[in-house]
Image 1: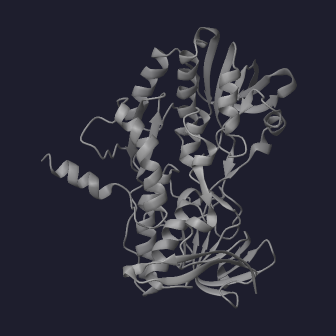
Image 2: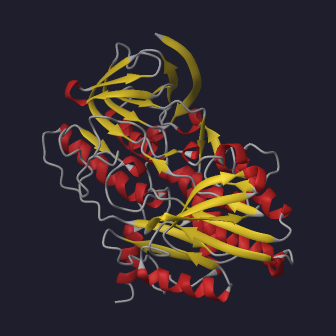
Image 3: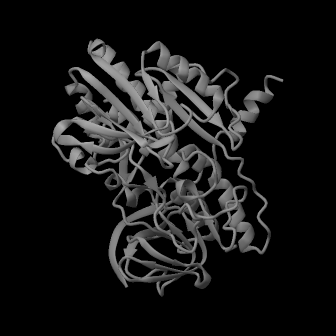
Length: 439
């Protein structure tokens, strides 16, 4: 059944060498059965798979993931600003998946939770005892007419940070900008990291100032949202920033078409859908509409996996859990949320395996480092209630150089070395210690 051995690595628990393989094969777990099936090898899938495989032992966890590369997606913002390179943002998938787990290099096309079965694109069937859905979000560039064509024009004026296929275009477009409208958009859908469309807005505006082009630019942020940011504590500061930097913000404004041969973008007023307007652009950064990958029988009417927001256990199938962007839990979809969710999911899955009711509760923690330029950042942290849940004993709504370098230099190694290995559960403990020390 084994088709391809992807890599052979050493694992050193308690200083003892044990050699094990990460493999991609046609059947799963030898005869198409496994104890735990993790669908998705992104941040959430890797983190929980690492925890579970360490606990359960070699060969008990199977990861279903088709990609060859694992991207640290939070870095895409910095790549768009020319601060990092695309090469900095990825590693081979075989190097980040836990060595004690088995890798099926394939994707899920059908879920049958009533039969504890997943069907793959290659026509295989995998039966499981427990399932973790960690499929993330898919980018729907094709839902905006003209957008894919615009993004295929070499050195064009339309760019997007959200895909490794397009992220290098952003800095190229900033460098090529001469004069006119620089437009940045936020779609009428859930997105990965709701702050990211603004981060490149601020970096882009700062770049235009640094390159002496700002006086010739109209910087515009067209967002489908009714607010500039969902947490008022940070939104108040962001309004001050856009006012100070002469950035025009149009809320409830959604991109519906791009006409690349004329450099035109068509928008609709979401409060009055019959009202549409067309704007020319010299630069157009598009955040595409997004949705959860198809997982019929497991999802709500919105397409997201139907889990209890506290335990992250499926509301109908007790042996099914979800983590990260594909989950219907109403938190912001960020890597920081995944870190906090990973320990909750892990402990609750272990509890269910032992016939115990899940008791770990996810509080909705999310963090969004709102990069506001080439050396400043607002470190937004909050919970389900959109109440600030800040780690440091300072006002994190203020732009700070220290937070920029935390985003740029500290968070990547934390992601690669701790989170993906199941060793980082978010800053909850550090937060308690820092605030306790001040009491």
